[in-house]
Image 1 (cartoon, one colour):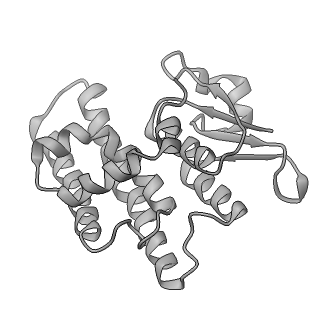
Image 2 (tube, rainbow, N blue to C red):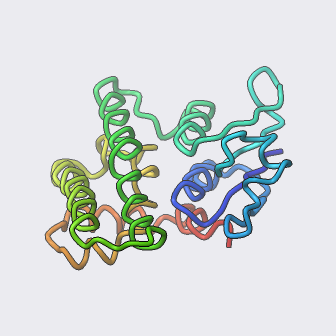
Length: 206
């Protein structure tokens, strides 16, 4: 049995994407971030950092119960366990890691910074917000350039790098359309977003 503790954020959607793509049965445990449920004693026993997502899997390594946090770790764990969405070609596998970590270290955190500036920072400074938006658009242009050379980030087949990036794109679709000029990224997003499993994963937790 797999339990997914999650919320309707990019980090919360990534594990659902891989679980849906692999066709695994799992139970959704919705964590209400607005009510602070991620700071409850029960949740902190699963992840002391008080952050979603977390999976609790009764069928972990060696049949032991696995409690795993961090959306990218969850992506990689299930892809490796089931031998899917990780390229077998060594060069493509290296590219998969390159673009996966470009999402994890650059695009997603910058998108999160934009969200925080727009919603939580009490004093709005337009130049600061534009600085982070420019950084985010630079990341999207980087991916767009790659997707002008290849159907997916790592090569001709979809990989965990694509599943990592898609929630960031979805959250910033309006900004991308407004700034324009990223036709390769938009073509890729239409292809990825048309996958039934991606559509189901993006709808989690409802």
